[in-house]
Length: 177
Image (cartoon, rainbow, N blue to C red):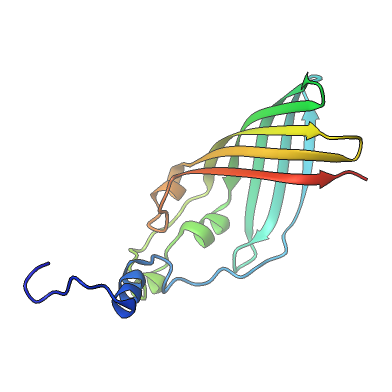
């Protein structure tokens, strides 16, 4: 450590360091919202499907809109009781959505460590996914998902973004009625 600095990090110093480097301190909280929307699936062939989901009402001004579009290929019964689905897709957002989740207003910049940033409408991210389903019997199945997502466009340039690439893994036990 430099002269006059302590090498001991206690609870108070650790808390102060975290607050000085937390990009969300001083930013407006995005409140929980009930979103409205719908979906449309188009089967290109027996195994190829285009899935689309449109939701609106996101962000504090409730004007945020997101369209998710995926192209998925379904490998049916690759092994007895197992199915694999692979897909690629993207998320498109309007300016209200982009500003709510990636923008930094002048007011927020004044009370946070972030510089002002105006986000734009367009492609928010692209992703690749793999789903694996194991049908245990007619009612029960184990379903797993692996997703790799990459922020692009103005979303990827936001000072709020810590990682442009994210990996998501989940597994669940599901019951069908």
